[in-house]
Length: 509
Image (cartoon, rainbow, N blue to C red; front, side, top):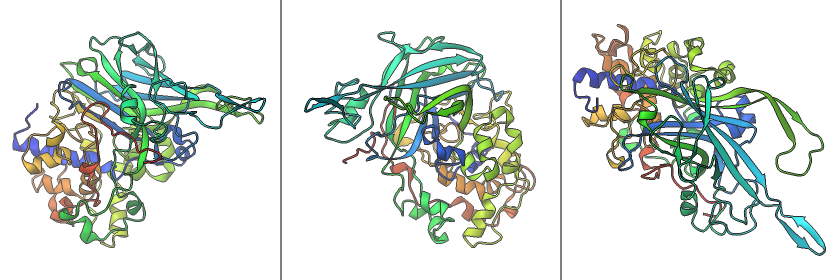
């Protein structure tokens, strides 16, 4: 499976790569009405890929980013996660659109009540730190952030739940580093954060894994403001491949909070089914009471109770942001993959090509092959022969073939499989076969929605995407293969090893 050399399979990979990306034009920031009111549970990106750190090629890295658009100077409380929330990463290991494994993160924020003697009074300080910090649980920390990690086999609520523990000392609680407040508080944040990467034992898994939870620099690159301002860019720029890096990345100075796991592939996939599907969700308690006279402490104003209620969902990048219609955005965030048929019209009859046609004043350029069966084919099932499970149930999630070996960072094609095919290379380990931080899903998406995969399908339905999916129904023709957002994802700084996302921007950098 590592070398996809046959021309037919290469073309199939090409079309499906664009197809799966049709849901993405930017990272998933504030994508639904309700989630804008609870940013601590807003999932912004989900990555799933074979680890490309040297010596770790048999491991799968799972990264779920939450609480997007963090400004580094956002004190004095900064960006702790919600102790009244449940953050989860789900894996479908047999293609039935239901979770078989779930990793659950719960957070605790402990107030240490550091006080200073002012005259004859002991008075609590107003900050989350009282001095310099270099170690976990430093005495100068006024708030200690920690978390537990469980694995659930079967249904996320009724399945077998067991604790993931520290591989060295057996502890079931892990410290989260405080955010990158600035150089005076944390002189070497990279070294400080590295002390919070833990080796872990996962019940039912013979190989130890790794976990890290903490602030990271946002790894997503996009011309965000321009896109949402009705694609306020000249057509001559976004159709010229030589201008791929013409404008700066608008997320370059933003941070996120990352939940990262590295798990051996033998713990997630089987020899009979090497493809896994993945997505992340966050849930809140169904009820919340506000105390008009909260007691002293930390986050005591609200009291949460009742059943867990899912309010955020993210698999493929940006499905909910630019594909799902506004009336259904909250409903999508509360849904499960097994019920995705209810949203089919947004894929078969997408509004995005028509919107692009209108806002760019290029009438008559939206693909004409309606319903868009070409998008449905790979978007909901994975790519046959690459990352489609043998007994797949159509549903939206990232899918990864764990038998396709990773490619070193320097050799990775930023356009994933589509770029690999165009370049005649050997990188089939990228989007949409999972998603790596370097993969430029924005540019791949623009190609897809404007008909690029029908250019690949040809006049003889070579890829089985439907007889109407052909070049004659792509008014943009070959130009559809040149579209981009003028921001280069490949220039985003990243680490070469777990947790891969870069050191966060500091408050005084």
